[in-house]
Length: 78
Image 1 (spheres, rainbow, N blue to C red):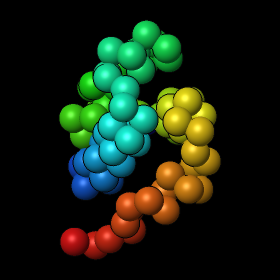
Image 2 (cartoon, rainbow, N blue to C red):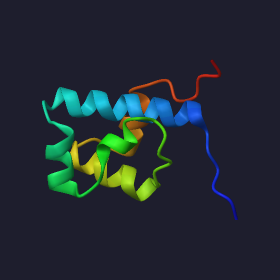
Image 3 (spheres, rainbow, N blue to C red):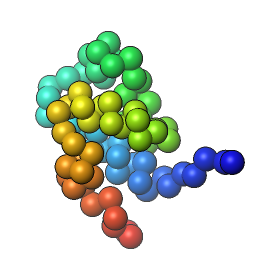
Image 4 (cartoon, rainbow, N blue to C red):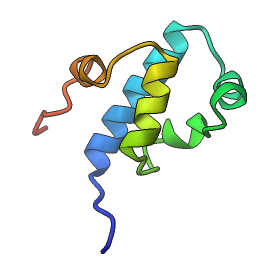
């Protein structure tokens, strides 16, 4: 089975994650050192991350998945 990709969704996720990281005043390196997840690759909007990875990042930023998806318009058709 091939992996499904939605470039618009990936960019929205990337921007939201970058915003959360910057709000916490963390560098990409600090996030990597803590989680061992290459957040820089995800923040480019080109990496199709798993829900499990997104959950781990949200846990680190102390935000629920529900709240994460409400911080940006992920359902926009634009």
